[in-house]
Figure (cartoon, rainbow, N blue to C red):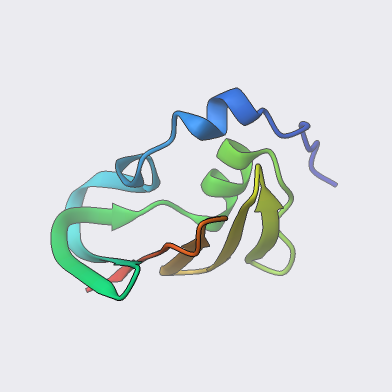
Length: 97
């Protein structure tokens, strides 16, 4: 069983969408929805693995998925798709393009 560290809010607050993307081959689509507005862009790189993001957030991945709330942000992830929902209702999705 992997060792799970407690969440570190100061570390999570410093994360940006780029933190979840690994430079290199491939493309990912980033969609941000806020107060009825939608921003969509494509970025070169690939989404980090479920295990890498679980470690970054200090949560445990179960069966290749993350379903957790970290510092008020709901995080749902499975391979190739990450969804974040913030306390103010904003949503961000990062997925393979």
